[in-house]
Length: 291
Image (cartoon, rainbow, N blue to C red; front, side, top):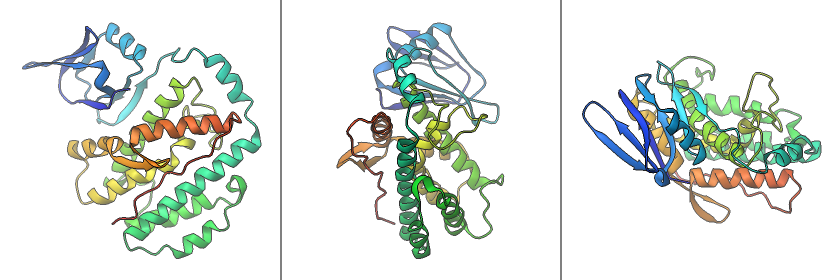
């Protein structure tokens, strides 16, 4: 898989040429090898894309995210047959045991909470009571500690007046970053031959990405860190670039250094193996203990 995220912001034509993405604007022509590309974000409604390019992007498992007139992500491109074992994998997915799903969600919720606590600690915010809250985390988070701690976490990191559901600059940044992260998770699940709709904890009939929403949770805090860093900025193209680039930052995972998008890919596959009863130890996603 390529490592580059291509961000299209101006009127252009996107087409295919000899295993390259061809970008034609009024003033320039650019070619980029498919081998370099991981994701294309079309952030303008003034771009056109050829059908042949779409087919080739799917064939090469390159994620394409389309943005609406407000420049926020509204859809993504996903192929029908990304994995030859898809039918077998979907049968396995439907048969995942309740116990395994609950065990994995407990691990994910615990990991997410630890990362939120680390962020509070890094930013000199009160966190000791959240450690006590986490001690009451039950199997499958039956006591809903994840939601309780999340509310306290957001109000402390962004101020007591902050509300996650409001339309404001901070939430615009968070939502954009989370959408980019969700899309990357969708890509990994689909390419492995599983359905994003069938989650282990999220089960909304209105959400096509329940499983992605589950598995991405411990990575959300990397977006949070970037938004904390840039919270005084306006939500503009610069901030979007910064949030997209979170996928390329180096993190430690499974005793090695990965760029985040590759750590996410390994995490997704490890989760799927765990759910399929393969002998695997789940690795934790760890934030640096730095301010």
